[in-house]
Length: 190
Ligand code: 5GP
Image 1 (cartoon, protein in one colour):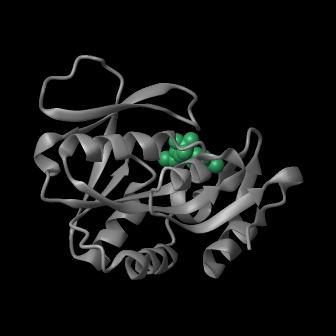
Image 2 (cartoon, protein in one colour):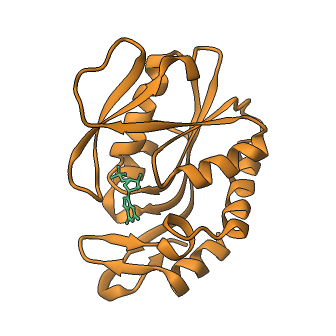
């Protein structure tokens, strides 16, 4: 997606450890026109899949999930990150290693917000090694809902999570795929 590639090139910052900072338009300050175009693009891709819920994980996935849900005219649900192991039976949960914080969380979604009648589209800002997407897929499975696919704003192709999902047969759609970020220069997949 050209306008997202341009925003990354002009406003993104490559940090050490393969991290891309996009606080200027996605993670801290939100460019509403840009994320609206992103949500519309995701809608065009999945509009015939019968999506009834958008699922993401707090905090940085929420903005794009909400604006995408508006195009589908459905609700957006976000998993919370929980540190305590003791959960009662009211939640779907899955363990997830955080790429950016380098710690393990348990993602939790109250059972009342997803069920077997739902068709879920997972939406997130980044796909790196795939831990967050896989944990959300696990939660969808636990709920008995159908998975329409996974839509990602920025896939970092060189970290492997996207290819793993494609190999598993997941319907993955990434608005942009980054092939490398060496010497501060972002190279996009054509
Ligand atoms: P994964 O679980 O696929 O390894 O990483 C995806 C999650 O980590 C996303 O939910 C996202 O919030 C965060 N993340 C991964 N890589 C980056 C990055 O380069 N920049 C930012 N801002 N977040 C990232």
